[in-house]
Length: 389
Image (cartoon, rainbow, N blue to C red; front, side, top):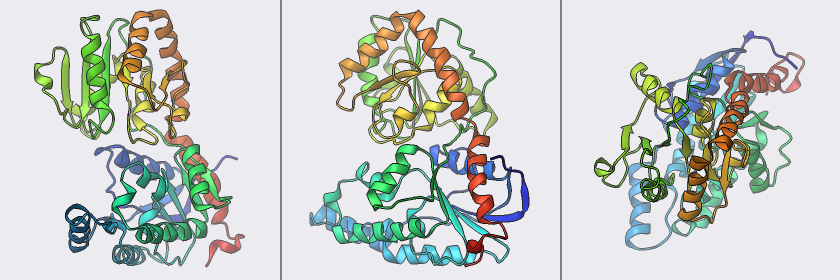
């Protein structure tokens, strides 16, 4: 099915983030998804609705957890915050908006629908929480409340779109929902797709790109780099994003690039220059579920080494477009993987070619927009009895 543009269908885009490309993966996906929908609908991006904890509730929870060593509440999604957010959504919507389209799902759990609605998300609350926090620090009944509100939001939606197939199946499993209205949409690249692979054929530059250096395995990459540098003197390491927690200025061949904003022409030029001549993206993440950087690097021909968990196997064909390490890997396994690619250039060149071929379809936001539009357009047809609630 191929959709055509339907300007008569008005879609309200509801998000907690402003419409800009820079700021990290969440901003990139928010920008990319709403822009992709503009090819098919009249998209009205409503003012961002901030998702932040009440200061008193946050202080009380932290006091309970850190001082008294007792489970606290989860203040970002406290009942008062969910109700306030729901009220803000209702105030933001206009009568002409035929569909409310939400970025994410958890924050909107207490909204009372007055029209058809859809959402686009990475993962559900339980999946994100288990990957980020210690459950023992929070009251079980508080977490169950958040999950129940999210489940009701998911169950009542006309369509829920997921960035990955893994995230979709996790949502079905966690919430015990058939999820017939759950759909895989994918997600595209935040960077311009290069016309060709511009690697110079010699550069052994390693790259890491992450907002949080240690959470994304930067400390592991450091150990690997220090082990391999004497063996490969030309080896370099470009670090983009959060500042490393070691003395990188004294380390030979290491360059910290800082946060590069693709919305700023000079930053975008620097980022594309680095990725265009990068040998390998090393991303042994501890928490990413669907790292956009793997796809972005691969569009330049740069393969990645990452972890065989979450949705990452959807982004890397092990041994073909990069390498997947089992979650229990140690730095010696990571070092050996990088060493093998540095030593076998014929294998590496084949991997580079395949990485780009594999990534180009995944990086196309136009395909994401078409997948969503193919589902949304029938929902809003005059013949659909669910069009008016």
